[in-house]
Image (cartoon, rainbow, N blue to C red; front, side, top):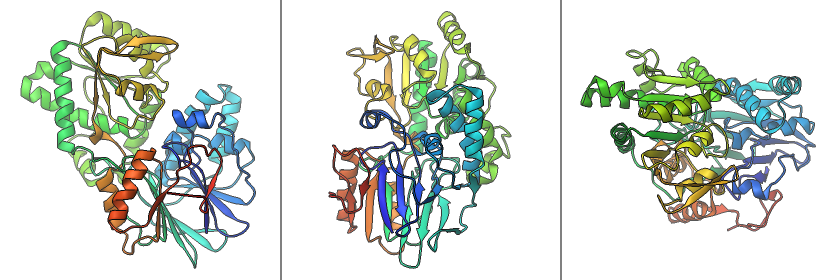
Length: 464
């Protein structure tokens, strides 16, 4: 079985891999959008590879960098099954509707027709069940622990067993079950987003978040948290519920009610509702919390903003009231979305804290802010320069991606070492650092290193 990489092999976004099952039949694994610097190398989202012989699309999960080009795939003539886990089947139409409206068209009829075409192709498959593919092959989904519904994909025939990791979850995630290593993988296509880093632990991240929120309370400022609508927002709400309650116990009931906690993201609100319906897929810890808290994502001083136009009014209210506030808004990389209006309103204030809880791709506004030294630089938003006087924080423990320790644990959980590990979905320094670590442990790890490559990469191309 030959693998052709159409995206996600030189950077972090645009994941799309084609596995040839035989000379005439193949399947796609993910079909994601390029973001940040990756998007500048791929200026058009149109599908740039032939669809002949592609018999199915298998999805690891529903983050945009793994599904964002599906509408273009459909428009290019793809009308084959889209296999995914049951939670992903629930999330996919909601995520794609948002992507279509933002990136393709707001024409309701066109959006509706495109969504119907996609929905008609969705085939949910339970975790752990082997499902037939053409060419005498079969696949199954295993738990990835990245977001709800995320899956590791194993594909096998009589000769080979290949595993695509998708995005592997962190050991610190409280809501999800941990990743499950495959029982075999001759070739392992493995993400490496944080392949050269170690995340802080869960206890440390909670302590840091609490310290930031206490500072916000004291200086009557705002804490801005850019967060992905699916996964990170729900995890933050789950832990904020406990952190705010802890602040109230330590500093009195007045502290508990002093904050406005605002989720300004229609998509995140929709997805949180679906999250609450997916209890069977939660971790044991999260299900146990339900015995004492029937709504772990909802609490008294939580305000949800989902209507267009309400963000501006909320910003003016926050400016006038001077009340401490915590705002969670998309997008997670500050590459658009409602977080941009809050940044424009508050990034110049010294009593503003910006908390990054997820990966910031090179070329995004989030990365520019993250790399900016307080009071010494500015960032460009909507053609205007804004001085960065806000304090910025990166809490890596909230990342939904595995760090180097998690990834090594995943690899070492495979009973027989893979013959080859291909590192994808990472910046070059992460892929290179992780390759060296895996090689020290005795694994045959490779990564692609051709910064000028714009087209697909076959497994025979030069590699490091």
